[in-house]
Length: 316
Image 1 (cartoon, rainbow, N blue to C red):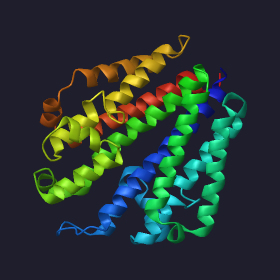
Image 2 (image 1 turned 180 degrees about the horizontal axis):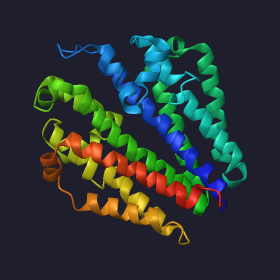
Image 3 (image 1 turned 90 degrees about the horizontal axis):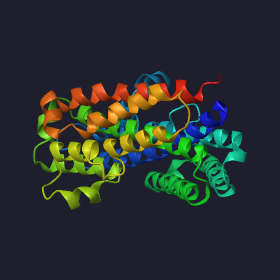
């Protein structure tokens, strides 16, 4: 497969996964912003959490000044000038899909093209008419439909592997950043957030729901959500689809299945990352410090993404 084709397939799936992740993040932040904050800040600061995760705080301040709820939601949902918005991610995914139209199925193309046409209409009407929660559910639904069309119609060849590779790299990065941002939002109240208060319950429950892991948590643990259990679930449980461990296993297996020797640096990094997660216990992470461990691991995922780019996606 040509590196350009592989790159378009990889980034098509990354941008779609990123749009879904942004929708999950916005939906949870918006819901929490409407709840009483119990003296630990206001709802506006809760809405600012996506700025921390995407690193767009300075960009937002430069364009819009002080935090404002309506401007924040538009900035991340429908702002075409913000490359990190859902609108921009879906546009980039559609452009990549168009470039590889001959390597994806008709069902996949029709889904992603219809999604792009629909969001352009939504952008014209505005979020106030559509509704924030309804918009986020729509984005997640469109992502699920595309993923289902992909699994149900495309051949299990290299194109399929690069699509899956992009999905799991993006998902692993998102899980790490969401968990780290939730910790950072706690600030000086971090110790309060992780004990058994009602505020802690809603904070950790919101994070689990953002990653579609709340049901998995209630099946595995009996206690109310806390830092130890949530971190173990989202980092080390291989049977939770959006956990870091599950993503790492998928990435390792996909890279190992790609032919040729050019990918050895990326394959080695993926195997090392998977082994580190496989043989790490939650007590070791907490002993090092959850925030320190997360900020150490996030660059590893970025390094793996760079290795994949150099091994497979750069033109020779």
